[in-house]
Amino acid sequence: MEARRSGTGGWTAWARWAYPLALAALIVFASSRSRVPGIGAPGGDKLVHFAVFGLLATLTVRLLPRSAAWVAVAVVSPFGATDEWHQSFTPGRHMDWADWVADTLGAAVAVLAYLRWAAYRRLLEAPVGRLCRKARIEKPASPDSMEGAP
Image 1 (tube, rainbow, N blue to C red):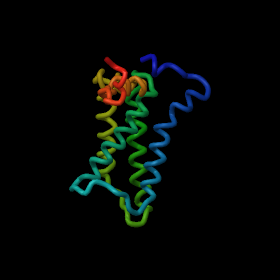
Image 2: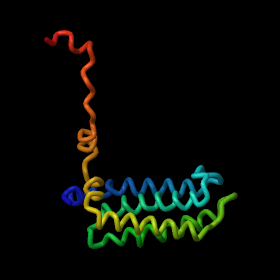
Image 3: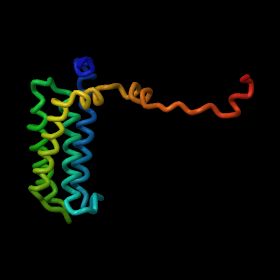
Image 4: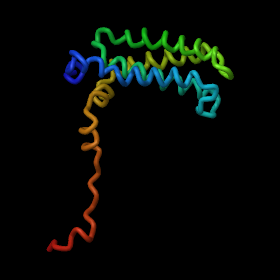
C-alpha cells in the first residue's frame, strides 16, 4: 500500500499517470487506423478489447484510493464508448457496441481482481527489480570459470 501513497505531490503525482495516459493515446491512435492487426479467431477482437481496457483500468485503479477504485471503471467505460464512436469516422472501421461491452467488462473484471485478489495486487505493486531478482535462475558455472578451483 505504501507504494501507492508515495510521491503524491508535484511532478511525481502527474508522472504516475504517464502509463494510463500513454495506453489511452495508443488506443486512440489504433482507432484512427483503417487496419489494425488482431487475433484471427472468431470473437478475437472482443478478447483484445477485454484485455486492453482491463489493462487500462488496472493502470488507473492503482493510482486511486481503494475506496474510489470503481471510478476506474466509470472512466474507462465511457472512454471505450467514445473510442467506438471515434472508429465510426475511420474509413474501413465501424462502431460495434459489443466491443464497448467487452471494454467495460474487461475494466470491471480487472478492478474486481485488483480489489479482491491480494496476490495479484502484490504482484502489481512489487518493484520490477525485485521481481527480476526473485525470478532469476542462476546459471551453472562454466568449465572455463573453474580453472583455479580445486
